[in-house]
Length: 135
Image (cartoon, rainbow, N blue to C red; front, side, top):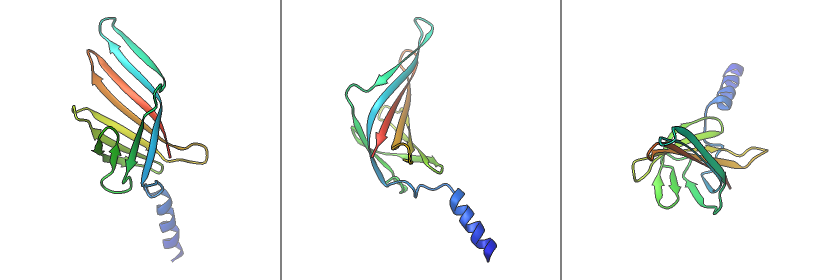
């Protein structure tokens, strides 16, 4: 019996679970970066910095099978994977671009954090990343 209790307790500690996550978050963009290839100059160009005009997104139903992103539109997300304190989602934007959303649960040091990444071919490969803090 003791071994069963030990194994059960151990599995509960190491099994990936979204139960530690809240079911929804309000997130505000704080910084953005871009990395892109400029064919005309044959160089990789980068940029980034604080968001000049902060914008917000909201995640809801995170622990369900049907998570949702509320931004310019209400968009269903696909939960790709989850680990102890991270969940990865995918969004298929209206133009067909896949946007990856990564949610890091808060801990004793930092608030919950959301990162979005999307890539396009805009006369050269370019990737945009936005970093959000969430409540």
